[in-house]
Structures are given as C-alpha cells and as structure tokens.
Image 1 (cartoon, one colour):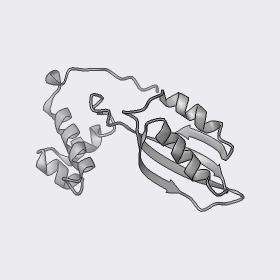
Image 2 (tube, rainbow, N blue to C red; image 1 turned 180 degrees about the vertical axis):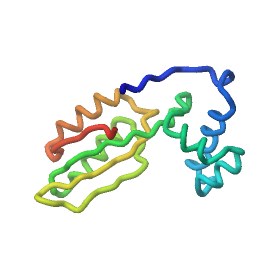
Image 3 (tube, one colour; image 1 turned 60 degrees about the horizontal axis):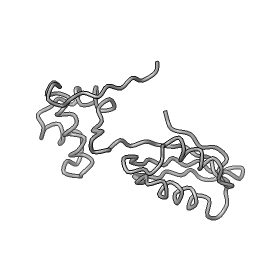
Image 4 (cartoon, helix red, strand yellow; image 1 turned 135 degrees about the vertical axis):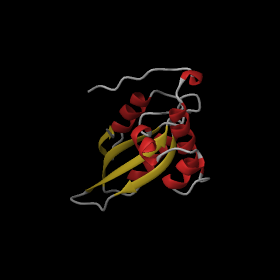
Length: 141
C-alpha cells in the first residue's frame, strides 16, 4: 500500500497528535530518557504514542529521519566516502550501524535528518550509487 501524506494546519488536529509530536521531540532532545517518561510528561498513553509515532512528522521543523542501507566494498575509506557524500548533500547523520565485512563487502545503515538537504533525496541516492566502493544503496522501507 502506497503511503499518502496530507498537510494539515496544526490547530485542527486532535490533541493526541500534538502530544505524540511533543513526546517525540522530548525523546530526540534527551529531555525524556525513554518513551514512558516522554508520554508521562505530555499526559499520553504509551499505546497511543506507539500507534501514531511513525505517522506524525513536523515538516515545518524538517525533523524527518530517513535510513539508507548500503553494501560497501571492504576497502579503506569506503564508509568515509559514503558519509562525506551524505554530509555534502546537506543531510545530518544521526546514526551509523555497520556489520562485520563478509566476502569482501560490509552492510551499513545510516540514519539521517533530511530537512537541510541542498538536493533531492533521490538525487543524493543516485550520487551514492556512482561511488566506486558502493555496491548497492537504497532507502530503508
């Protein structure tokens, strides 16, 4: 099923959506150490948080985090080149997870904030695909 997004003025939303957004902000800033603390601060049930957390994004603040999965050649500088290209595109790297290399290749997952990118996300992916040490790269689903 294809995702469909709507742009809605915040004033017409039910409070539950605003509370989920605030709880996500508390978690991201470190003001809340875990989901239980964040939901308690904003007076929201944990079940409501989990129900909506992956569907609510603050586009005005460009806080969406996107993860790309890449397979890189097991060569010195391969990860550094990938990260440099992501940074050059204007994305802010949030996390990096890399597996142990096997058969001359290593898998890496890079999560990034895309709000300040100077190019389209797909354009950046295409540029990453053309790096010599990149075997495969795609957006995580």
